[in-house]
Amino acid sequence: MNIKDQEYFIKLAEYRNFSKAAKDLYISQTALSKVIAGLEDEVGEKLFIRNTNSVSLSEAGRVYLDYAKKIVSLYSQSQSIIHRSLLEEGTLRIGVTDLSDSLINALGILHQKFPNAKVRLYSDQLSAEAFSVSKLDMIMLPEDAAKDLNYIPIAARKGLYAIMNTHHRLAKNRILDLPDLEQEDLIFSIGENGRLDAAYDYCLKAGFKPKVSFLFNDSKYQMDIILNSSAVAVSFNLFRRFRETMDSIVSIPININHPINDRLVLAYREDNRNPLIPEMIQCIQAFREIRFSNE
Image 1 (cartoon, one colour):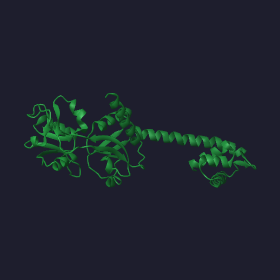
Image 2 (image 1 turned 120 degrees about the vertical axis):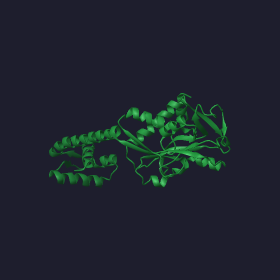
Image 3 (image 1 turned 30 degrees about the vertical axis):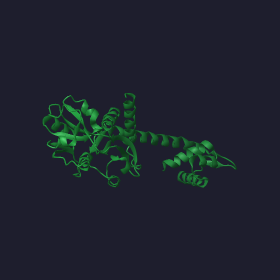
Image 4 (image 1 turned 45 degrees about the vertical axis):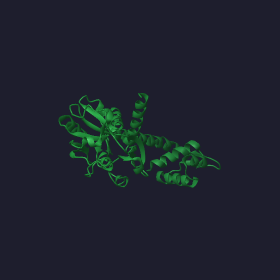
């Protein structure tokens, strides 16, 4: 028994005309006729009485219609229950190149809607090609690297910052140059593939070779190092708002020679049916509305 067959039967019973029903179902009249003939063979009774320009339900057809409606209704209810269960108890796996205020706040909104849903963040810096065969549901990428993937803009790298605790000797500066950090123990993030982040790459392109003393792939570890040592994290401004809410940490802009304006997107595959993906997209859009209304 095919649920589509039941839907086709109900539609023909509604229109009582093969041509009109087929048109509404976006199938050919011949295909609809074959479906109905197959149902009649399965039941062993004629379900419709055919006339020249119309059809009408037979006695068997009227009985069958009640069951067909119940079958379609139960199927719809089961799909809805399964979908809701996947939302409330499901898992969303996201590959992130940078932590951003937009991402963290969107995840907060998602958690409010579905407190039992799980989100797994992976710091590996995957390419669009590698993502296509990975088990991740979404991935943060520069917009020009997203290629044929569907995506939604989530953040932009616009500035480089030195993040340190308030007792650091450089903490009173309003702005820093990269050479000011030459003698400092610096902190950079590293992906699961062992590659240092884009902030490190930018320093190299600017002619500054950082003294890398600490590597992290977990933001809590990064914050612990900053709070409990004289080390300085070099990062883009993506997580700035969150850091500025912490009384013991300061974010000082670094004077840069080459402009930075990389738009980051959260990309996903069109064929991925994880119901948490469209919900995450809505949460990103909701945070945008909140942010813009407060600016």
